[in-house]
Amino acid sequence: MAKILRIDHIAVAVKDVDAGIAKYQTILGAELVEKAELSIMGNRMSAAYLKVGDGLIVLDGAVEPDGFIAKFIERRGEGLHHLGIVVDDLDGYVEELEAAGVRIAHRESLGPLRREILLSPKDLCRSGSDPSAPLSAKRRRHRGRRDRGEMGRARHAPSQETRILRPHRAHKP
Image (cartoon, rainbow, N blue to C red):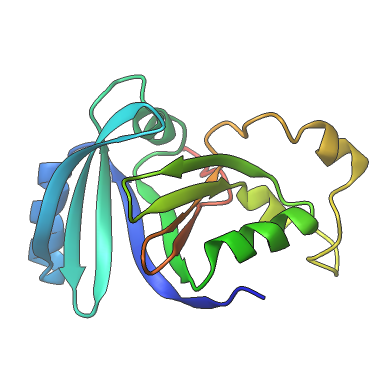
């Protein structure tokens, strides 16, 4: 059985990464570790890695107006985008998830040392007393569809990271 080892990072979707860096430095005393432009799932995005105490906060910003970060912010506003957790055995974790009926929405290698999978938080938040119970027949019919913007992300590097996105929609006033 795969074991979750720790929380790796907290990622926050922001409209302006540079403004976010300045705010986190001022309010939290964050130290900028690295700022990079990345391509994930074919979408370019900007990311700033900030050390806060012993933790890591990642500010995710849109580079493309139709990219997934821009769409996320448009639907939900700025805020929590995902949590990164480290697992000891990503392949074993994937097997356990699939056996429990959890959909692996996307798989991607990010270089030779890092892989990632995407999970739907709906599978983590479904009702019922048995979280390992298989998905209902209705859910299985929809397994091939991507939940619009409500996906979790699981990664692993040598530390085998898993990350899971925010599971609910924020209500806009």
